[in-house]
Length: 427
Image 1 (cartoon, rainbow, N blue to C red):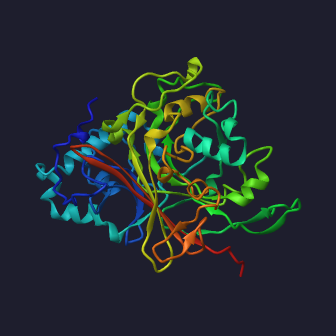
Image 2 (cartoon, rainbow, N blue to C red; image 1 turned 60 degrees about the horizontal axis):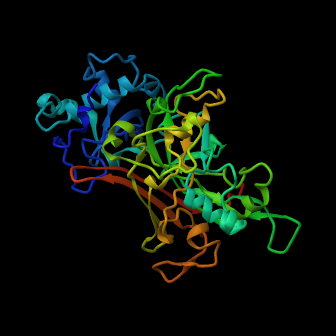
């Protein structure tokens, strides 16, 4: 089935700013709360949110097999479970409805008032009920930097790293949408030169520049997903700030890996950009040497050219861009990650979220964490208000943005932006 929604020549009757992340060729999916306190599934064109629940009630999806309440729910899980054919049919229909040459909805002012909202008048929610969350560690540059910092630089990568997409299971209960502030966590840390831990606020809060993909129901327990089929089970992508407490992490991660240093908060952008929308931006990933085992081998273009940016904004000050990177640098692809994840028969469900791991590029300005950008605090980054940052201070806001662009169209994710607050104090 062709992806007619991607036609680069298509224009919308909704005005779209020239530099918008959300032209009619994007059509992402999300969940929002209207000013009448109604939660609905929607999409976005330009600076306007589209109520898909209202569209369905008004029979604009006639001919597409959908349950009666498909878009009148508070999560996208059921829609995602319907699979790739349904996603494409719905996206194509939305593109047709909002095409500049289609008067069906455009000239029905009564329907437009029910369906179209200004973004300022809605409140974005978490788009899916995330049952399980996995975080990978798939940037060779990031793994090499961290390995060089804390181990022998000559052996920065552990022996398994070039053979498997390393990952760990995170905590879905602390995943929040953009705009929700995050509290500095408490935890055990050990001061330099000491051997006994103390309990108190983390002093090394970091961001991790990541993306994440959202899955549909992929398999039954015991079944593996072949790498060449894996992309069929990926609905779309979001931006992910996987907050980290580096001092807590340093003390707790041996022998079992990340735990409380990572699960206190993870922030995601609220619009899921579909893999269909990202199709024009496929590119080849890094050459893999040694060749992966047969179940991870793939040919063709399985990386995506997504420009990424991180900025830190101190309170009452202009933001400073601290990192500019690109998703195409990732050593292990999303399809390899999903194939490996299910290789032992692990079940993957609709709404599961898989983090890419920190995305670091080959140059110092493209590193995806403060740990790397400041080299564990040795090289502080100046802010525009004259202060410096080794890690993230209380009341700093961290904002990540991402977009794809070619000569014809720009497809973006919007942003994930969160403020770091002092530790939570029980009243």
